Length: 293
DNA sequence: CACTTGACCTGTCCGC
DNA sequence: TGCGGACAGGTCAAGT
Image (tube, rainbow, N blue to C red):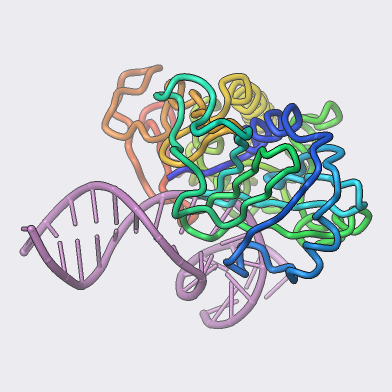
């Protein structure tokens, strides 16, 4: 599948921030309540007629701010897409091979936002795990998820020592589960957990408390490296993920272990294996990443 | 309280 | 070819 993590959501944010501000909402169509639980009357009242004033991100969540002082809060979960089309565009910009989405709406479209200039923003979500919610902007950070979520790993004040201390909040669990815990650090999912652990030569089953200071520091460096690199590459597209123009990301062509089971480790040549850790499919080089005793 | 498992969904793939 | 079941994995709720 596809799995929007921090780099994918940030790529969508960058795209939407270049496309949406200034546009005025003319109408909103939505018919799957769990995808957008707000009452239609509130959507009419606080979205229709409002202009978009900014697009932000916190963890894996997108925040589209409106002139009505409300914000459209969106979590893409696994298969969500936010795709923008101008009035006359039938397909996404760029070469057809760069796009996974055809004419919109399609059968995965859960919400369509139409702007006064005829352009539209489509919220597609094959598996319906994602959601949109309209909230007063001053109250957005009061939702449970934001109250608990950890720091942004790419913020300048996020140091390796903070990373270590927050991971140690889960010192008795394995390092993979700790990395995936959004209350420890924001935005890491299955792809970048596996990629960073491979880079640091740490087995995902390793108990957090058994890691040395040097290993924490190395894991921090590798995590920051893969997150930044992936943003440069427009994120990872395996099956569903596309950016705001419908374009695929190219991190997967760089990935060292993720989805590379049975292929040679690019560092030592041993065969990469897929195992199960923290209830997730997990990719490791059994030679570089030794199983803890 | 720390940690694990199941539920939410749909589409794809694998084995019989 | 059809069909059941496993699997994909972000997050919350429920269970141990």
